[in-house]
Image (cartoon, rainbow, N blue to C red; front, top):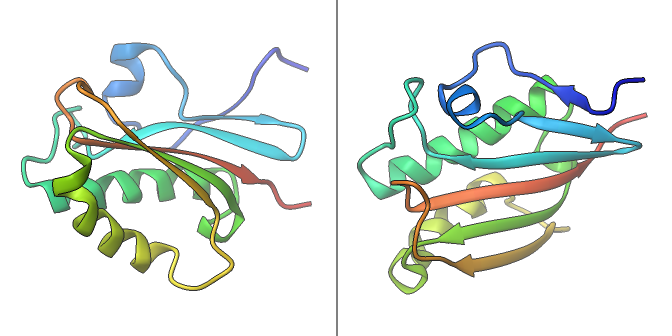
Length: 130
């Protein structure tokens, strides 16, 4: 078995190659997904904040689907925010569309000063199906 059981996506955005990381890796029954940002195919950020958050969730969904699962299998969420107080309402609105009903995954939000030109990033751990 390879050192890393990597999940790749059919249409990779440019950041994977530019920064040298994989979209996700399997370890036993868990899937560890790299931080997803609101990047366009060329790696540039969506300029409008809500569109950037939505694209980050869309990019996350693409990775989950490539592993054969969806948002229902997400166990743990970590999000990174450049201005949490100003961004919280928008993020919660988008989050509620994705994780609409209990049981909810665990969630940790972290305020940061830099995200390489982005304002929001989301990474998750999910359970793989049998």
